[in-house]
Length: 377
Ligand code: NDP
Image (cartoon, rainbow, N blue to C red; front, side):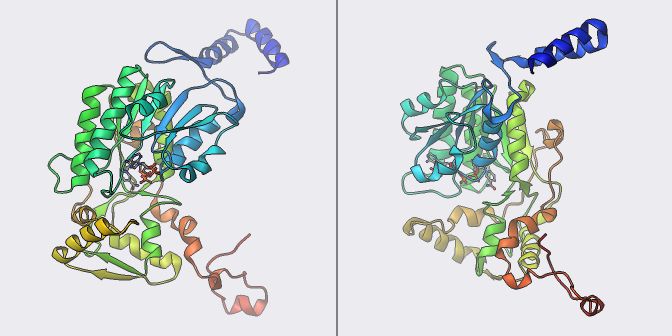
């Protein structure tokens, strides 16, 4: 607030009791007291403001990571980003002002590096997860032991808030190892840090997703369940918005959130939407589970790029179920976006340039109702 603004506001507040009330509320909002009693100077001047929270985001180099780092950094928070690979983190540097996005090298088995990453923070987000086992980390190492180590560091330094991103369908009795380990991870972090906020996102879509991009990009898409698994796809930006809101709302501590989109689709229905949007027909090959599951397992073991895994084939046979006890977007006052309304935005890059056409220029063209799919303005 500028000096002149402040003086006039004070003068007017002396005259009118209503204005005075409004002004006092404004003052109180400048300083927030965290759960552990630490005062935080909240800032409203955007990315160049001084003050705000310090947040650590584990797994920030992934798909969802950028949607929370960008929100935090642009509102003036200091964001600590533990990373493993130099090139994977570069795009995050520019999300905040100079010095506000801090990178620290971290290894999920190196407790000291984890503690170093969290000890100055007011909130820690754990977004670390992997869809398939890798050479050095199986799913249990990442989702349970890794999460446990992070929760222990959070508890050791008495960090105010811990938000752990799990997964939809997290269930200890699931036939899928991914869902099982996510459920064990939830249990482990809650045992260590009971105020953990658990977030279970549905399959996410967005620019860098593995849903629309896989369906649009692969010429031969191999599945085992005829693309019949059903779920409620959710927009990554909505999940990022929810994660940011959790920082500002302490009533979200100790709660579990299922974040899912407004409409239930089968994978096949999404594939149809994708084909229509990219104006191409992608081939879908269905192999029996007894053939494709062991083959995917072998490919995952011997090829060094992501090609699917046995567990991902297993997951094709499990529809998304929503835990009725969990909170949802509604409790955060967020209206989740509809997949159908955004497919054009995310998939236009897959269209042939032949479909970028101009509107009808002449009367004759108009009469002939020249069909054009998109107009660049
Ligand atoms: P990504 O796979 O895009 O990113 C995963 C992140 O975890 C990366 O930053 C990766 O780091 C890090 N990571 C993985 N393994 C390790 C490890 N062994 N040590 C250190 N870091 C590791 O995931 P998303 O952003 O898509 O998802 C975020 C979270 O949401 C994950 O927990 C995921 O399981 C969960 N989720 C995602 C869904 C989706 O549709 N995308 C659906 C449901 C849940 P690096 O870049 O160094 O590899």
